[in-house]
Structures are given as C-alpha cells and as structure tokens.
Length: 291
Ligand SMILES: [Zn+2]
Ligand SMILES: [Zn+2]
Image (cartoon, rainbow, N blue to C red; front, top):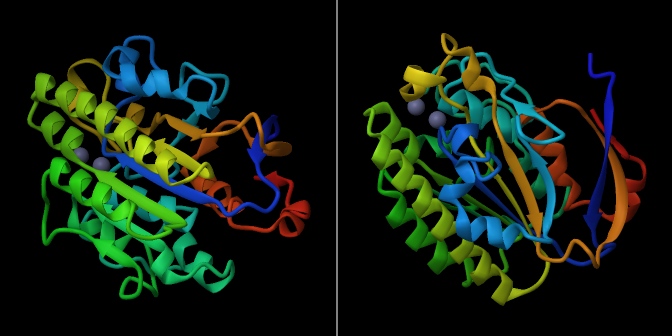
C-alpha cells in the first residue's frame, strides 16, 4: 500500500540521553496549525522557535502528509491509537482502559526507562485510559477527575518538568476542542494563541535543563471544513487530515541517520518514531525502515 518511501534524514545523537516531549492539542485543524499559511499567524513564537530546529513537518502544506488511521475520528480512539501504534478496539470516548501494550509499557519493559522517568499531564481524565496498560500506577500521571483548564495543566507541567530527569513527558491539552464544539471561533483561536505561548515557554524551560530534547507536536483529529468546522468524526471524513511537527534543539550537531518512512504517514508512525529515541545505536542499525 505504501509503495512510495520518503527518506527522512532523522537526526539523533549516537549515545546521548534523549528526552522526548509529546504535546497533543485536541482537535486543532491543520488549517489553524503552525504549518498552514493562515494558521502561522496564530503561532508567531513557535514559528520563530522552529527556525533551524525543525526535524520533520507533515501537513497538507508540507512535502509529507499525515492522517488519522482510526475510523472514528474522535478523541479516545485516536489517543489509544497513538500510544498503541495502531487502531484499537476502542470506538467511543467511553471505551475504557487500553487493552494492548502502549509505547510507554514498551519503554519500561524493553527499553529500560524507569517509570519515574515518565510523566503525563492532561486536561481530560480519559487520557489515563490511553497511555499505559500496565504502569499507570507507577508513572507520574496527573489528570483531573473530569476536565480542567489547559492553563491549570500547563502550570502543572511547567512545575513538574524541572523536578526530575523525565525521559518522556506528555502534555495533552483540550481547550481548542471544547471551544470549537461550542461554535466559539474567537475562543478557539484564543486557545491556539495560548498554545503558541505555552509551548514556547515549555521549550525554553526544557532548553534550560539541557540540549537533548525533541518535541513532537500534533493533534488527535482534525475538524470539518467550512461550516462543519465545529465538528469531527466518521461523518466528517476531512477530520482525518492531521499535522505533525518534530523539532529538536540541536539537529545540526546530531549525526544524520537515514530512516525511510511511509508516505503518507498516519498516527501509527508516532510510536516507532518515539521509541527510536530510546533505542541504542546498535538496536537502530537493524531497523532502518519504519513502515
Ligand atoms: Zn479530540
Ligand atoms: Zn471533539
């Protein structure tokens, strides 16, 4: 199916300890993403920060595209898909705890990352049902009982990130989707402008902790075109179109290491891309192609 391969000159240091941050912004359309010509206006700080440090961009405006691979195009099925690496049996936002091992389980079981080196901060309680099958009790998992403001989650993340050498840090933000479902266009744009400020603040904090940080920034689903912008789901097929940014503080000084990845990408590719950072060079020599 994926016969066209795109060679991605991925950058990674040979042995240096890597820290990966994954940030998901719920239901931010590609039209308002940092990669869209009009969306860039909402993202002045991040666009500036990405200069000379972007490793990969995927969107309808980029050489590479990315789409959802779950058919439901709603949140919890998409988050479980991201963490497991393929669509799961989860079909609704009430589907319950993930039933398969996630990459967080693999980081601990196979890649010798301590549970204490993994932190999750989310504005929506159900994120706890996507990230780990086995280790939710052992990792740092800061989620509300239902929902809380992104401002609160970001404050918690900023406090947490400097307290420990977190090898993997996940921040899941939600205001964008909440405002969009209400049809509140100014509120949706304000949420995105807040993300621009908060993400660059977190990047600045991380930079102060060391050079070996790589950020993945993406969304769980898109939204409809035109008047359907408030909605997403199986009946809104264009909400499968996504965007992804991978950015690293020192891509130029990393040795260039080629990986071929399928084009177009899907959410399924995030798991192997993230796990790549936690494998030794020897392990990666045998795995040059992510399909
Ligand atoms: Zn969502
Ligand atoms: Zn939604």
